[in-house]
Image 1 (cartoon, protein in one colour):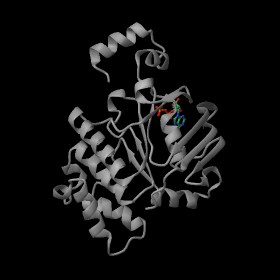
Image 2: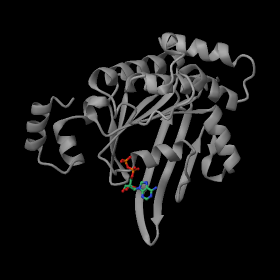
Image 3: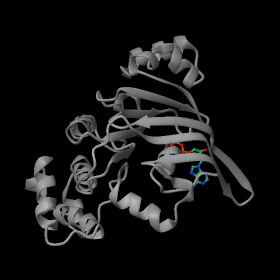
Image 4: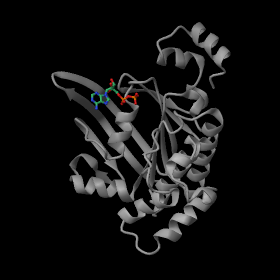
Amino acid sequence: MVVRTNETLVMAKDLTKVYKTGKVETAALRGVDLDVQAGEFTAVVGPSGSGKTTLLNLIGALDSATSGDLTVLGRDVNALSKRARADMRLHELGFVFQAYNLVSVLTAQENVEFVLELQGVGDERRKRAREVLEQLGLAKLAGRRPGELSGGEQQRVAVARCLAQEPEIFLLDEPTASLDWKAKTDILELVKRVHDARKLTTLFVTHDLSALPIACERVVLMKDGIIFDEGSPADLLNDDKLAQLYDMPVAEVVKRRGEAALI
Ligand code: ADP
């Protein structure tokens, strides 16, 4: 893994994405500009349907933009071949999704080994998988299959699998959405620890303001396919801003936050 500093790892300029389903077109991104520096922990927050996953998928070389420029790790992602994108996803970009996406017939250890096998790692696979599981406190669960693990444990294994790849950019899409409070906070702590220890560059997508890791230094607010605002959590996650983001009167936001202890 190359640890980069003082580098802009993601540069998006006027990025658009239009999905076409039959004759129906949905503009999911409508001109997004975003720079991400090496080592940053950025949360992308916004209501459902605001374009967060679409943006993450483009940065993660999982999908192509309709127009605009996107440079990730110095490469023009729109111009890459399918093969080159797949290589980036395997070697440089690590994903954790809401659905843990573990292979059900493989144990935790084998799930981690599996991704190393895809990377072409040879005999070292077993040892490396074991080390990552140990680092994440999962050694005891190494022999269990996903069906024998709780949701939180499965997500920890998914994080281990991602880290075993030694990615440069850590991309998480609603990783805690299916978890209870304890498992959610466990994963958030784990993500922070991993981000710090591995000096990763992390993009964390969530619609759930209570699922923002403490590690997050920068919040990007999305609304209707654009970046509505960005800044520090303290500057952005206040009643006025939330009222604008969710098209609600400020008084209603204040009332609901009080009732739900939202943040
Ligand atoms: P978010 O992650 O903020 O919930 P998404 O990026 O998933 O938002 O979706 C943005 C918009 O694009 C939504 O209106 C959604 O319905 C639409 N959309 C997302 N994926 C597809 C797809 N594969 N085909 C058609 N429309 C899509």
